[in-house]
Amino acid sequence: MPRPKEVDAAITAHMVWKTKLYSAITTGQTTLQVDSVRKDNACQLGQWLFGTPSVRSSPHFGKIQNLHWKFHQEAASVLELATSGRRDEARTAMGDAGSFQAISRALINALTAWESDP
Image (cartoon, rainbow, N blue to C red; front, side):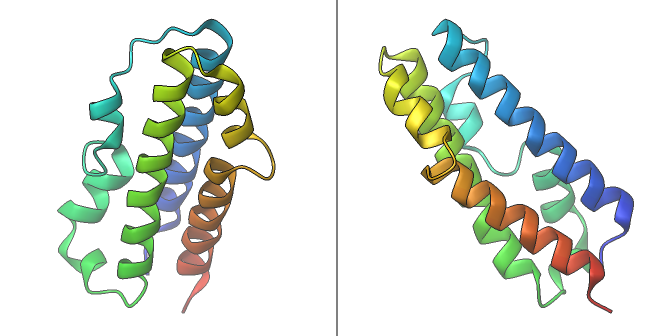
C-alpha cells in the first residue's frame, strides 16, 4: 500500500496540472511543451511509480500506471488544443463531461482506493 504522503502529493501535483492547463486555455500561451507533458515518467507521480520497486509489486500498480499514462495523454492533447488556437475544444475537454476531467477523476479515485486498500 502506498504511503498517504505520496498519494496526497500525487493528487495535489496533478491538480496543479489543471491550473496550468486552464491558464494555457485562457491565454493561449504556456511555457510547457506538449511532448514533455505527454511523458508519464517525468512528473512526481511518475518518478515515484517507476522508481519504487515495492510500488510496482502492488496489484493496483497496473491500473494506476495506465490511468496515469492516459492522464498525461489527455493533458498534452488539451495543451496542444489550447496553444494551437482551438481553445474552445480545450475548454470542452476540461469541462465536467470532458475527456480530461473523466481521466483525472478516474486517476484520483484509483489513487484513493489504492491508499485505503489494506
